[in-house]
Amino acid sequence: MKLVKTTNRSWKYLLSQNEADLLQGLIRNFPFTEYRQAKISNTEVNPKAAERGKLLNESLAEHRNELRKLALNLLAGQQWKKSGKDCHLTLNSEAREILLQILNDIRIVCWHELGEPEDLESKPARTSLKNLAHRNLMDLAGYFEYSLLEPAQSSL
Image 1 (cartoon, helix red, strand yellow):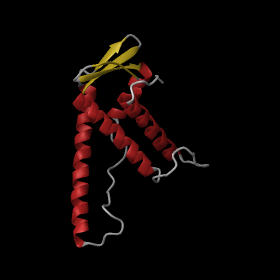
Image 2 (cartoon, one colour; image 1 turned 60 degrees about the vertical axis):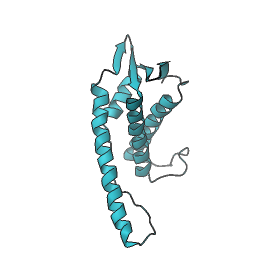
Image 3 (cartoon, one colour; image 1 turned 180 degrees about the horizontal axis):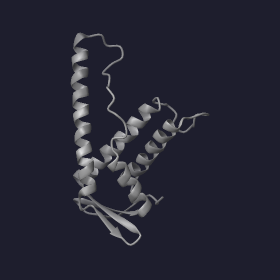
């Protein structure tokens, strides 16, 4: 995925067909996991902490549902243009921000599902297919996130 053109209001990326299929798959299947309740604090015993936690979780669930709707709009829009064997993706600032939020959500949820490991470089000696899938999703989302933010990237 390479940035090929930028203006004040848009970014145009060139993706191989493989990259386009993978990115569209990430968007189409978002979210990959069920919503998980967040905790404000593991140690706070203040009675208002439960109320704040409930409000936080309602807000996060609503945000994730909205992201799902916006993800489907990214697929349905005019942003994707076939160009020979490749594909062009043109994003305005709002669509780019939405895509970054979706990719970040995928990475964070997968990291949680993997048990929030501190060291992402070392691979466990034994891993389940589910953990392998979460690791691959996290890495793939990270690749696209990096490509959106650091345009001097080479393609897959």
